[in-house]
Image (cartoon, rainbow, N blue to C red):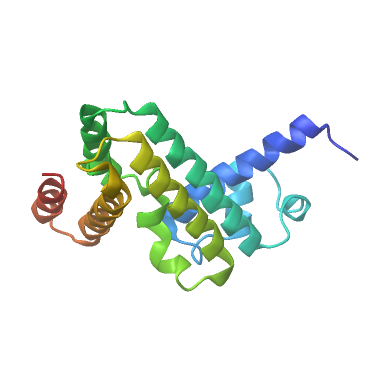
Length: 181
């Protein structure tokens, strides 16, 4: 039985939403296809109508999370205050404590380094993120906006990873606070 295109697209989006959230929360290896389909309210059977493999889903889920992330930048004001607010939200305890709705880079970069099928999606995301941030926010010198963006991304992503990795709440908060200065 064929479903209307709009219904099929909606199911595809629901699968991507669930997969992107679950992968960011628990990593690629700790999430099964059955769990993803259950989270969408669908049975496991139609998965292969949407994706060729789990690796294909992983790649598309990273691209889906990327689109969400890039949209957040567009919502931020193109000003120094907008950049500060964006970075403060990134380096917040709320973001640290909600990896499922957070930064795909901080959540999955170390795993993607060992998943060749997903590297292209991460590369596309990182290039787009660097370009969008460099163009959207003001930087000290226009000619070095790209370099400034890369340095800010590296330090904020690193801070989020470290803040999530420790079991000392004070140290975790200190890491976020110090990088956010």
